[in-house]
Length: 418
Ligand code: AMP
Image (cartoon, rainbow, N blue to C red; front, side, top):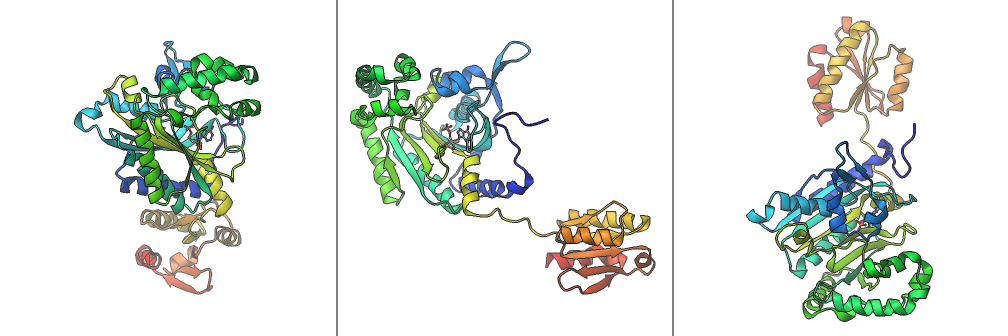
């Protein structure tokens, strides 16, 4: 049996960087006032169709959707924002305090063409803020991302930022864009043509080379922002500059989801080839209302956890597991029983101890202790039990001492807790 295409195991040898990221991210989120939320992996299909948008790659062709036994259409979550917004509304969180900051870490599912850095089950570290309209929160989220990447030792990352406008300035932009697209229609791919009526903004995001060429001089949302959106974007730029955050304004950045308004951004790296985005985010001031809640501004980002680890693997070696403290060599039934209880008590005290329950020779067990890189070995056979003198060998210095059984566990705890 093999994993499904685009799905993979993350084996214990590779897990330490994942844990390091989780620890750092959780610490930082808490310092910035975010609370962890856990949401289901499965939701009603309508939630994603309505929030992400019918005419997006995700909804059109990437979702894992199926009918359950009663015929309800369900989808494995392709992202977290829609579910977190659903939760915010379902539990009427806005009633008690509309300002909420959430984070979550977990798997997402998209049926994309797998390649390095792109999987069908991948992981995201996700942050969402509800109820804050100020541009300072946009900056704070970008700063938070920057700070996390700095703490993880990442370099060469760039924030690409853009403003997508709001419902009051987008229509005039869309009109201008449509006029422009009409004039280039014969040079666009089938997908773009199909999107002209459904979702013209996404045409700007097309990766097909000929389309990119044809759209080089397409109008930019930035030229047609209304005063409020323009002010908002200026505050974002000015504040990021003041905070020393490297960014470039990228007018082709439209992101793949329909719910974004105003600030959108992506953190890109040059070290991952085609899959250059390690994180993406944006403001979605209309989403909560669209999903049936009260008008509430929102903003968030998602870090591609798999890609982040891949970048980290290029620059630092995975931290090594701490060495095994003690290996217990038990020879014979009586010693095995004693050894079993000692090992459990030491494990419960938080000391990394191993025992081999196979009836092996002294030589074979010492070989295993070496293989496991044990700092100390405890040797117990019939003689040691009879004489109440259990041997403890320091594997570095080769020095040996003996311990009485009554005080063996507390003595060992003293040694290892030093
Ligand atoms: P998005 O929700 O599309 O904005 O994605 C946010 C981040 O998740 C991206 O910047 C990627 O780093 C990561 N990501 C998205 N899709 C995948 C995928 N199929 N495999 C691995 N990472 C992904």
